[in-house]
Length: 193
Ligand code: NI
Image (cartoon, rainbow, N blue to C red; front, side, top):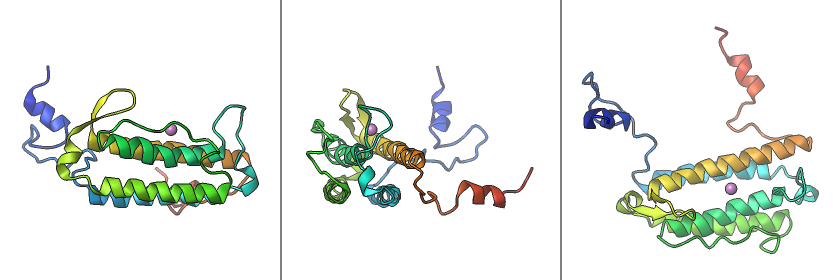
């Protein structure tokens, strides 16, 4: 059993034992606008690496039956629009496929991503602060606070973006550093301890 006071400090807000106020919201999404900005930037980083995919490699994968590069991009597009944007409205997911029938070829896939992202962002933008605090239901049947489910979407985006980086690395395709510097450049600037 955790005392309510200790629980409050574990949650990262309120008065700590020492009396010092803890400035931490545990990445809570209190209001939708800053999140839209953040997620928009996150999607831009995904698109930046996606633009490195050679058009003739869009259906490439490392093993039979695994996500192709095109599947990864379509999956990000349809989960955002048909799973997250539906779930946050208290609707069940209507994600049933990320197959080539949705969009075939790199340019068509980019167009699909742009359209579904724009529709999803429009839906997210209508969420009130109160909506963010109420529960919604995931496809697995779990009740989760809406802002936490939205936060999971950003981790999902990063997970699949990492796969795109790895696929391209296996193919020997150059990719951009995620935050401006390569790991080699960051290490060169680090202070040795
Ligand atoms: Ni996924």
